[in-house]
Length: 541
Image (spheres, rainbow, N blue to C red):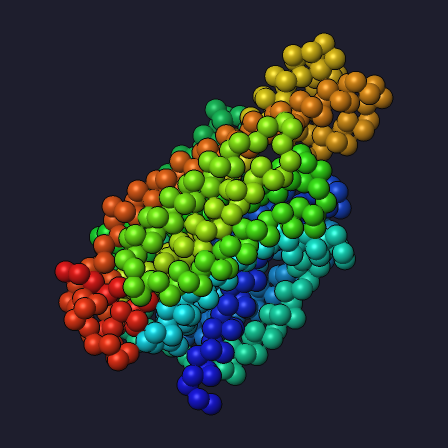
């Protein structure tokens, strides 16, 4: 089979897998109310439906990248597809919240394996100017999968039920496995390596302790022994992880990578992008469904403007990575994301969904600019044989950003919606009586999106109206604060990109090192060393 055809088959298989695994980060958002009613889930259960997946996805990415380097990225990629497909089936068959969340955790393991090897497979298959096109398509798939998730999830949930958002992964996964073995070439790191189990355990345990503490902090009390103990454990374990990585001969994460300013800047941008606008999709979906009262499909449809802009912009941004400095693309893109979040921090109790539309459009523009730069840069700041570790590390920062972003924003949201709604109720005698009678059950219903059900059980019409009006005030005020927090996080990423991402840090495949060839002096015929080979401008010393 011609090489040209084989490389495009590689892109099809990789993009299909990445689309599925990223889709499952957001596709469940619009189905959460249905899942809650079906499985009788609590608010914490709903958070774990998203976080269990993102958490294991983040925890296993670094190790999966190394395993792919050792045993062959194609075979490891296919194993990840198998795990992901099988666990998707179990998700769809779940009968309890615990069963669903455990299956989601295993699904994240399969997703981590696929994600960690995806960029390395593309980098191995594409050279020359086609690499910029491939990364542009890959970036569009990443942005589109996260943005289109609510639309697809809403359509499936409204049409055939929430379980099918998982069942559809199974046949797609099987087809992707067949393409992988039939059309993808094998690649691996020729050096002898080993899995860093100490690093894997300490990193995973630290991340789990942190997210668990953030999710449960409001319920158990931030000063409780359990929460304080978990936070201390998270810090101690993370310190142990870094000590181990500095001392071991074959680390899971080479800390020397962070001595490359561009790698540090790319990692910071990946984290802040995920922790800001990507983590915000959960709370935007809850706002559109629980506060504005749209159904699953109607809610998902409201995200379509962002999806279309992301797809359109990412394709062209991927091609621009060979002509425009990565620092400029990444920094400007993160500034655009910052602006989008502040544009969405303008809701009020009488707003309809169109108040979010300017932010959606601007956010799609920013995501479309940033994603191709992150994709190409992750494998362009290291030698080709280390691309598995580099891409795994970059994707880890994405998933850590989503997991911790959702957990932190959830803690803020859970606290603020209760306090703001309670304050609004207290302003009238009728509202104060609703608050007094509702007590703890009412406070628990506020973050869980069960206020309408509570209101339906109140016989007095004025009391029902007072509760719903106070809820609208509490939700819009809390959402605005979340958006402002997300905007600050994205701004940190923009500043880091401008300060750290230097073009001379990018590696030129084919033997030249960092800064040894500039775009102007490089040959223009597609041989190793051209800017087109690396997907970003090669370097100015």
